[in-house]
Length: 113
Length: 117
Image 1: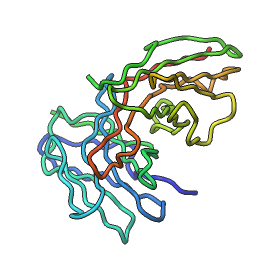
Image 2 (image 1 turned 45 degrees about the horizontal axis):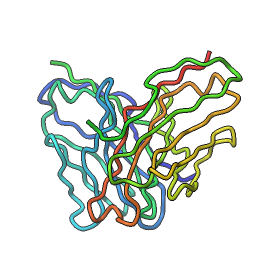
Image 3 (image 1 turned 180 degrees about the vertical axis):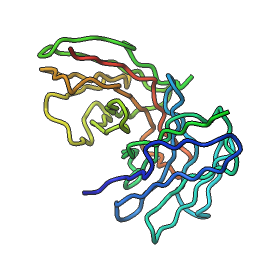
């Protein structure tokens, strides 16, 4: 079945540690890729998105993601996390440019002060 | 402020009952999508409305239905509620005809928490 997979259910880091959250998708053809963040009690917010061009995409709050087409991956990274990055992170795929998003199950990030 | 407003924010229903959730899209948007987010899961696509018609549908039973009004607002109806329907229901709006490469983005509301007891 076509899907979006996030490898880590819960990640716990100390402040200043580096972060990498994995995301793989199984859809063929043209896709747009996204990472969303959901802080406790808040709505989904867009961190970054990839459509075409440079596979290394920079987003808000120091996050970046790299699209590796051959691996169907779109991993999220941040060199140094902060306590305020504690949240749920969702990878999403838009198929065929139709605003029809498919989400991964999410990764809960806990950053210890 | 996400610009997408949903109501009610929380509600409790009994098994077998029916529920209606409402969504007003961001100003200028004409497409509304609904998602179900169960606890500890990612949002699951229910369906999408454009020009008052259901344009796409995810893997949800016919108990889930919707409507879009001329002002682009939308309703999600769920009949014969089951305990498993307990979830956060998210509405997302976007503008059709401008693909995401142009910079258009989907905006999510804060959701309606439905508890079925």
